[in-house]
Image (cartoon, rainbow, N blue to C red):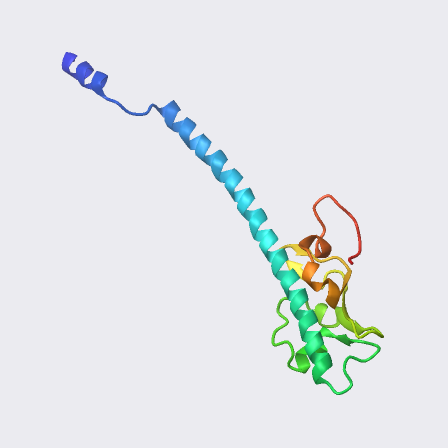
Length: 157
């Protein structure tokens, strides 16, 4: 019995309480990291849609140059750009986006994209209604396309 006590006395290791404390701390850190990573992923999806809007404006500009009559006064929808081959894929847009995303050209020749609400999706977030001209395209931000949590402003540039 004395021999057993001596062996147990020399044992070093973690008690159950210490081990439990480490596991709880690691779970808290993992929870914080998961929330942060999901926010980064959402922002990346929104930035991708900003890039898509810029590419659609560039495609509309190309369409305007290539077509004999250019963009008509009444404008054109995204599906027309796809039919003409100026945009290969419209998978970034919701089904309503094929007709809900339109392009017009003013008297000065500036092309504007008109985005109806809920025509683009970034993760679980739908876009808000917005209009952007070619001149605005370089300065479009994700906040111009998607509502920030807790706000309810409408419109674009």
